[in-house]
Figure 1 (cartoon, one colour):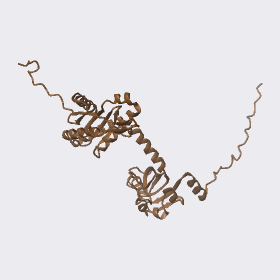
Figure 2: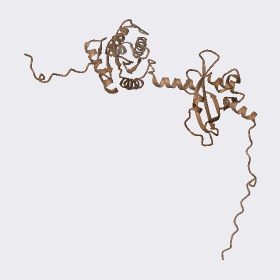
Figure 3: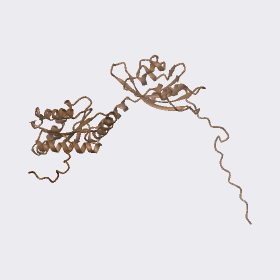
Figure 4: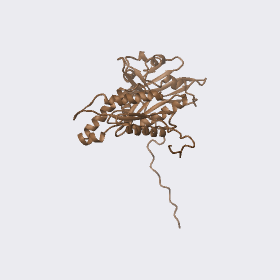
Length: 337
């Protein structure tokens, strides 16, 4: 005979019959939390252009008073030229529709400071809400001063693009620049140049004076090359003993002049090192594209062919790439008479 069992009675949950209401922060507490997090809140009435702020906004934005930021127009007047984004564009030029819960945006811009030339970087995250006509009526958000973070990010970006020894650009950046110049030159029917300059006898310098002195020579040569470039030209370290030079809007004649200028600049005076002054030289070769090269790979290959031709002519020489001349038909096997 099976004896029916009664279901076990569960202990009641405290307050299970009552709705649990989370305590709400007071305006004073909200202001305290914003201050502690380094953030300030705002609400922008898009129709009247009035900007309302939390009390800590001047300290976060590093402005004198809220009077400087009381309207969208006044706030926009503080934008620094370095800014590529702004709140007006993020709200009014947004092509998305407000589904009823607002449209989120997140931007970063720079604000001018009291001291001329100084700026602070602001991260702005908010949401705009549409009115009855579907156009932005209000934007609410949070701003944070990210000046130090922006500086760190910029420094990390700079380090990722530079050669640690010379402080100039590295091979990856130069190769990307060549591709961009090629695309631009092809599109606008212009030309540009690329030069490879190799340090002569660097191995001998390392063997005679040590790698430390050799590094000093490399850095010094890089600096001298940079002082002889034009404004939009780029110079970087391409390999252990080679520099790459990208010449913006460069003809064949310009390439020849620039190549010889760089070669002469290195020869013109010794370089100071811990082992004393050292006389150094570079040998260089270059190519003009897209005239004599159809892509990045050919640009690099043809510049190095020109470099080898310059080395054959002698240390401290420059040679520009010229395509091999076609042999006239019927003369391939003709012997000299």
